[in-house]
Length: 284
Image 1: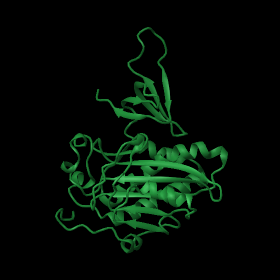
Image 2: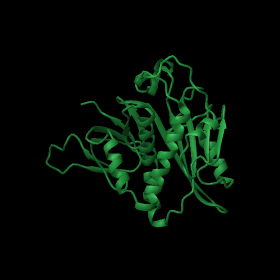
Image 3: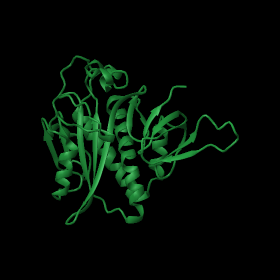
Image 4: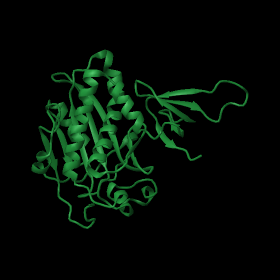
């Protein structure tokens, strides 16, 4: 039986999060804030101060939430989930490039799995790490990394997730492309349980990569990825655009895109293997 869509929503609570948390390291320390400028910014500061692996920064609202490519992230209070995790793993130099490439992808995968479990919603991933329901965006991921002399390298995984808000509350320029889990499913989602499940899924993905590499993660990600098989417009880091068919996700996490339309002079099509790009699914 679906929950009453009008029932009151539980506030974020350390006790409630921990009551369903089933992780070894992720969430052993949780810093919960009513309001913060950016969970990623706070997590970076903690990482540079030497905080332990798996530390989580959670906020009920953000005043300067950030998305990919320096975009602002709409961060209203009391309805969404904003969190950042400090990750410290002894990844070897030969694996570091693949690890950094896969970290945002496995975070997207973990988030989608958590939403499916807690909210019974069918979530897809637009490469590399946008979370979609019915082709509307419900969340995004921002990963950062650095090194501190006394404590080594670290990565920050930041998640912004539109959970219980109404689509009409978004700024006008986002209403056609963004949505919330509650709007799409018709019932509210318990944010404490969703966060605990996300941390469980992400820790499992990180441990999978560390012990076995990316092979099984790549298989699971490809099954979730709605970009494969679509015509896309990719804006590259230098501002140039490339339109083509998103053919596959390669083992290192790059997106293979084959030029469309095909050249009319018989030349072989250009092929881009994208590690970083802004992707739009083109309606055909």
